[in-house]
Length: 248
Image 1: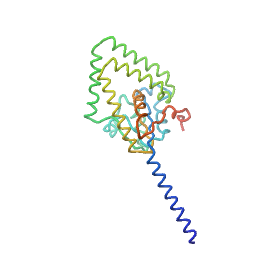
Image 2: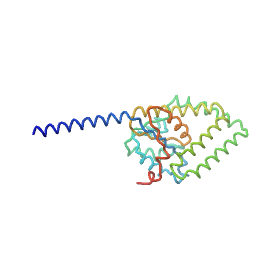
Image 3: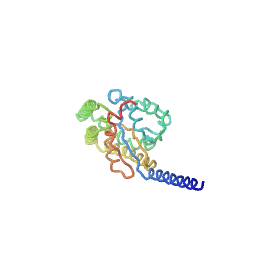
């Protein structure tokens, strides 16, 4: 009996050490971050990345934490969205039946208005100028999206380097044409997202964080998260292989 008691005690101690080591290992690992680009209302126009496919992709990425492109008050109210239709159609229903830690990425007032004000003012002044650049930039934007829609055969393509490169070029041209307010507003808005994501990574080591954000932000966030300490940025396009995104 004493032998059995000793063996049982040793096993218990070893299992205890294993459990502590496992927990410590999880805490010491950086969070994995996946930037998942969304298409807002355009999900209805891209069959390979429909609203239903977006739902499948989020579920199959198995997030522990969701960082969402909404304000905290809108998230709490599950408010309707005219543009970001993925929230009422996909993400809010997932939250109702999932078990995710949820983080709102957009700033609350008055920071919300303070960040956007120079951006809005610069764009209003640019549109009011009525110059040839206004029509040219609109035509360029339309052509960019027309070309991208032919490229977006699936969720992986929406999140690949080709898409990021095209939208990086689009924003470089917009900033050159519209000026400092456009550049400042875009930079500050994305920097706020970056700060929120980095804090979420610090708060949830060893867990997977999925960031749902409009496709135009993808190139900026991926570039800066790749340089950030304390987290591991995963390759979204590689994760979204056809095998992964097939319905269960």
